[in-house]
Amino acid sequence: MTPPTRAGTVPQRRDRRDSRWDEHRRARREQLVAATVAAVGEHGPGVGMEEIAAAAGTSKTVVYRHFADRGELHLAVCTQVAGQLLEALRTAMTSTEKPRQMVAAAIDTYLAFIEADPELYRFVVHAPAGDPGADPIAGLSELVGAQATALVALALEGAGRPTAAAEPWGHGLVGLVRSAADRWLSSPEPMPRGELTAHLTDLAWAGLSGVVTRTTNEETR
Image 1: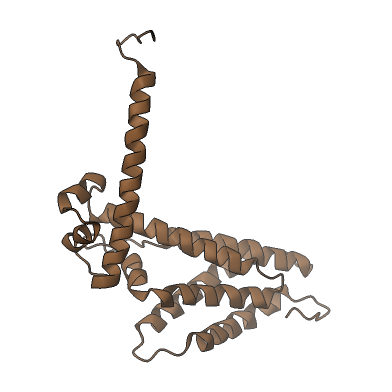
Image 2 (image 1 turned 45 degrees about the vertical axis):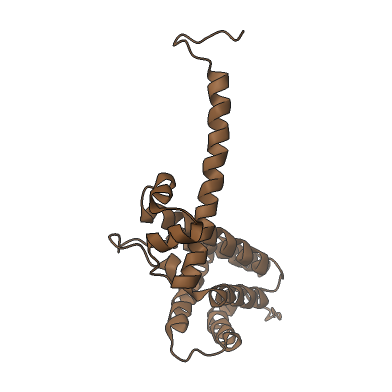
């Protein structure tokens, strides 16, 4: 017989029960996030909680049992989307050791990601009503900026230059691409993704090449 604690309980047995419920809650939250993504695809970024509940085959009461409010559900969707995008960008930016190709691959990956599901992207980047000052993907921008900073630093080291410029360049690139991509997504007549990728790569590289190119003018392409 397991000895009780001072409070007269058996923590091991309670912990096992809690663990089973934790797994159930985690799985249910994942299902509701998936249902939200599906509902956004059907109804657009302004999807309502009733439509989300319907997509999940349940009621709003059940949704609110797992998420305190729409903001918490929105954050869970943002976290999932951010993880997927960050992984895609990391793969793109480490697919080559040539700086210009690295920039082009990262830009095209970002544009391809939002082009594939623009409604979900709009849902992610717009905070729920009542919290207009929030930036749902600010954390993602920081992570991507940090990744870009590390890669620019490597390029600077390879060129025999100080790495002080790595951080402003890395985060500056993220801001440039995100702003241009948001405008592209809202344009009534957007240019083909390949053209935009080329334009943004040219613009970014016009500045970057000056700090990552060897003083001997070694070819970096």
